[in-house]
Image (cartoon, rainbow, N blue to C red; front, side, top):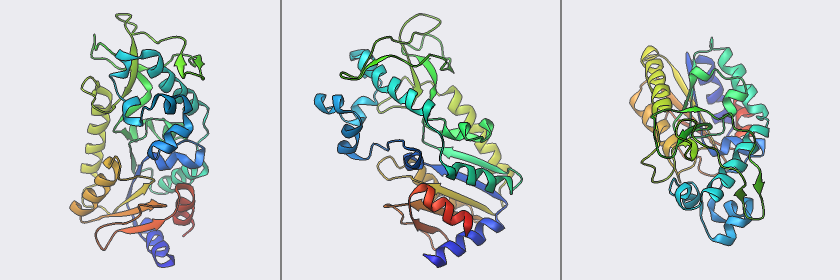
Length: 274
């Protein structure tokens, strides 16, 4: 472990650019749930346990058709949770780290909570691959537009996890939904995330051939978007190295990559302190 820490610290010191990649585990130290397994999910939302729905059934666009009050009860509760949450100290440490690299960084995250923006990271240097709860779209896709979620906190009957009011599309007055890529989602409007993807691609092209360190925090294998990116990018780019921080699934492929068995905040502190 000590050898890995020293190696990680040296790699970061030598890096010319940083990619921060993060999964749900990044928010755990801020008090956010990671919905690990049905038992963990149901513990957070007892009314859903009574219904027997799992996370994939709740995070599904069809629920806005079949049970919009429950759908917005779930996402309305999460919206308030994310708005009220203060990003943990690890965000600040990462921000200080990238400032030392002349702010030559990009964030690549599957999280929809907006915590990186709240912590002070440049919104133009963040790629939210699964969208954001802080943006909305029409469930009917009447216009291919995405707009900021300025809806006030939604009043929710927590015994049923049902929203008492339902946000509407400003154009056609039909139901709106979060601009989040859900399971089995063919109606997701990807305009905003596509723009972020282009900015990220342009950034990687500008930094091609440089020493790049990927610091991955709390990315599991159940939804492997973040892990797969880190494995692939470090394999394809000769100058790129992956530092994977995870308390359980910390294994890495490739001799140059480093694994750190730790939670998000703990691992960031260890890497930051060397």
